[in-house]
Length: 382
Ligand SMILES: Cc1cc2nc3c(=O)[nH]c(=O)nc-3n(C[C@H](O)[C@H](O)[C@H](O)COP(=O)(O)OP(=O)(O)OC[C@H]3O[C@@H](n4cnc5c(N)ncnc54)[C@H](O)[C@@H]3O)c2cc1C
Image (cartoon, rainbow, N blue to C red; front, side):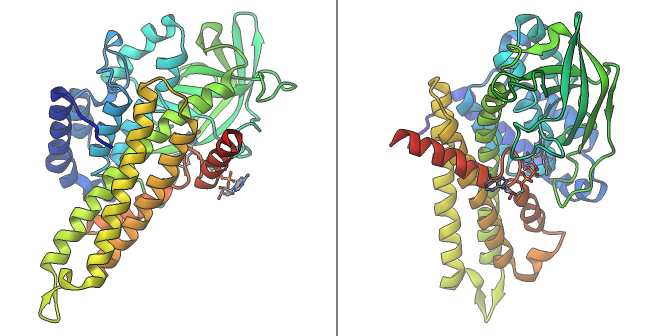
C-alpha cells in the first residue's frame, strides 16, 4: 500500500526524525539512569507541538488525522520509549475521550492547555481486579445533587503521578454493568478526594511514570461526564481502538530503528576476518526483521486510513497492535543476537529497546485479548 504524505506532513516527519536523533537519543542513557525525562526535552516537545498532535486546531492543537498521527508516532518510536510514552499516552488515550466524545464546554475548558502540554492527560481504566476484564470495575460513582462522588482505585496508570487531568471510568449503575452502567469522567488532579500512589518500579519504560490513582469520596462536577452517562464502556473501547493504532506505529518506528542499528553493527563487527554481515545467518535475521516491519507498517497505516475514512476499525486496530508489537519483540530479540554480548550491555540502545518492547504485548489490551477481539469479528463477519 502507498501512503502519500502532504508536503507539510513530510516536513513534520523529517523535523521529528531530526529531533529524536539529534536531541532525544543523546539523553537516552541519562533517562535510563535517572528514570526521568530532562525538562528541556519536554519543553522542546511542547515547542514542536507534539502534545497537541491529536487536538483540533480550534483548541490550539495541530489536529493531525490518524495517518498523520501514526506518521509522527512512528518517528517518535525511533527513540527512547519512555520519553515517547509520556507524549503518546497524553495525545492518545489521555485526550481522545475529550476530543471525540466530550461536550463543547469540556473541550474549551481543557483542550487548549493539553495541546500546549501545560496540562498532562492520563487514562484510568485498569484496576487491581479489572485488567483484561475491564467490565469488572469496582470503582464507582454515585450522583449526589450536582455532583458525582467517586470511590475506588485505578492502577498502572501511565502519567498517573504527573497528570493534571484523568479520563476515569467508573460504575454508575451496578445492575447494568458494562451494558449501560459504566460512565467516563474527566477528573482534575485537584478535585478533592483524588490521591496519587507512589511511582511503580518497572522492567523498562524508564522516565515514563505509572502509579495508582485513588478516589476517596472524590467530588466531580456533573458537567465533567464525558459523553453520555452509562456509555463509558463503549467510550473506553473506542478510545483504546484508536490508541492501539498509535501504539502499533510506535512499535514500527522502534523496529525500524533496531534494523538500522543491527545492519550498521553487522557491517562493522569483524569476526573470522570478515564483517559478520557477510554470514547468511545474520543476513536472514535482517531479512526477516525488515520484511516483518514493513508488513507491520502496512497493517498500521491501513488501520489509520480506515479511521480517517470514518470506518469501523476495531478489528484492524487490534490486528495492527497485535502484529506490530509481536514484530517489535521479535526484531528486538534478533537485534540483541546480532550485537552478541554487546547487545546485552546497557550502553547499547538495543538492550533498552529489548526491555521496552515487552510492555507493548501487554498494555492497551494484552495480545491474547487482541486475538479474542479479532476472532470475534471474524466469526461475526463470516
Ligand atoms: C507499564 C504499564 C502501563 C499501563 N498504562 C495503563 C494506563 O495508562 N491506563 C490503564 O487503564 N491501564 C494501564 N495499564 C494496564 C494494562 O492495560 C493492563 O496491565 C492490561 O490490560 C492487562 O491487564 P492485567 O495486567 O490485569 O492482566 P490480566 O488481565 O490479569 O491478564 C493476565 C494474563 O491472562 C491473560 N488473559 C486474561 N483473560 C484472558 C482471556 N479471556 N483469554 C485469554 N487470556 C486471558 C492475559 O492476556 C495475560 O496474559 C498499564 C500497564 C502497564 C504494565
